[in-house]
Amino acid sequence: MDTESTYSGYSYYSSHSKKSHRQGERNRERHKSPRNKDGRGSEKSVTIQAPTGEPLLANDSTRTEEVQDDNWGETTTAITGTSEHSISQEDIARISKDMEDSVGLDCKRYLGLTVASVLGLLVFLTPIAFILLPPILWRDELEPCGTICEGLFISVAFKLLILLIGTWALFFRKQRADVPRVFVFRALLLVLIFLFVVSYWLFYGVRILDSRDRNYQGIVQYAVSLVDALLFIHYLAIVLLELRQLQPMFTLQVVRSTDGESRFYSLGHLSIQRAALVVLENYYKDFTIYNPNLLTASKFRAAKHMAGLKVYNVDGPSNNATGQSRAMIAAAARRRDSSHNELYYEEAEHERRVKKRRARLVVAVEEAFIHIQRLQAEEQQKAPGEVMDPREAAQAIFPSMARALQKYLRATRQQHYHSMESILRHLAFCITNSMTPKAFLERYLSAGPTLQYDKERWLSTQWKLVSDEAVTNGLRDGIVFVLKCLDFSLVVNVKKIPFIVLSEEFIDPKSHKFVLRLQSETSV
Image (cartoon, rainbow, N blue to C red; front, top):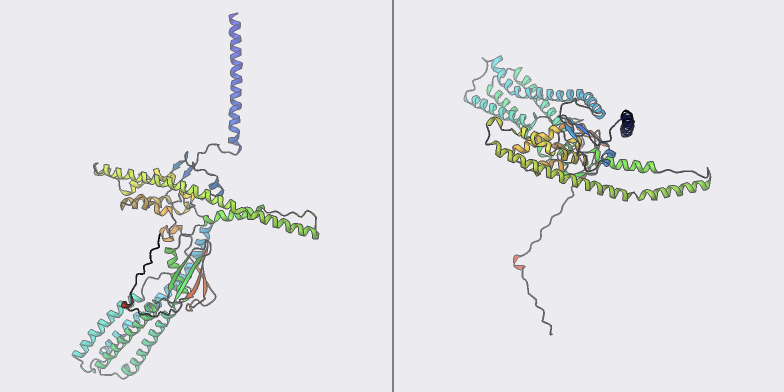
């Protein structure tokens, strides 16, 4: 009996354990089914690899950004390391275009520099040759010059030194850009100098070398006159190249084609290509950096509304069907006009999310800077070998603010402009110069000019000048030219500054007399 009860209890336990085991397997399979359905887990754990020198976050689509809630990153694991650099199709196109254009630009640049150098060498050697050739060829036939010639030698030496310094300061400066056409005034000056020197050589060869003139004092004075004329030409170059353009004559309105951001600049008498160069130099420091991700939301919204517009022809090809189709199109247009409500709520939600993440970022950065100040006070009492440099301090406090900074950059769509390496460099710079948390955050809370970011983050380095007139022509009222790059364009509208008539009106100081008028009191 005991054996049977034991056996029956064992059978009941075995059957119950098998049933429980099968039920557990079914439960596990049921839990695994949503996981294995698309090959991913249902947890919100995300692993981000942020190597040095790469953007802090990968470029995500707009829909991914909208789906993420404010608690994104609570279970995120950040892994730092080293990986290979990636490159996009736009970068490949830009690099190939740069390689194609670099050969011709380098040839043109070095050709102009070579011509100017050869002509400058000819100009400086010509007066010296005028003085040295007669003593070398017919020394015995020359008349003695004495003290007068020695004084002229000193004068020529100092004038050549002044001319050398002035020429180096005016002409031999580092080229800022490559322009499509030559600079007209510079080319005219080079031609004038060449003709001037050639005419002096012709006169010298006919009147002095052929006749073997024995008046050495006259020959030296002839060389001095050449140096004086070269100094006057240098003065003319300063007037044409530098002083002529100082007085403002035109106002240029520069508008970026993508977002409509505009600036105004005042310029003097310049050619179109030089005005375009001035506009581009000011663009990199005045305009905020171009962010194409900010235009993604509007494009996605427009595409969604266009996809939702459908027209059906129910009655077949007839006149009545045409009228019904027009009525349906009008109804769809009225329905589409109500999309401003959707835009309003989307922008309000986006602003709320940005403000919330900004507050979290400000608090995280302030707490991190408080820690680094406490570490500085403690480290001064430790051994010199344990003191951290600014780079190590930045790496120590960066993880405490990395998550908040990631989320804020994603919300404002700035993640592709800030790499982890650039953030660490900026943080170390702020720590070195004892800057406040607000000074550190200023770069990330508001978009800055293009020069603020690394050169590899710039989207525009090569430009095309499009103009209806020759680019060597001067500016005038009503001219419009366009500066195009790979991603956007700058439309420049030229307006002449109006002529202002200012008159004077004299007011005698003694005429400032006033009378106090009192009203009579009313009876009660």
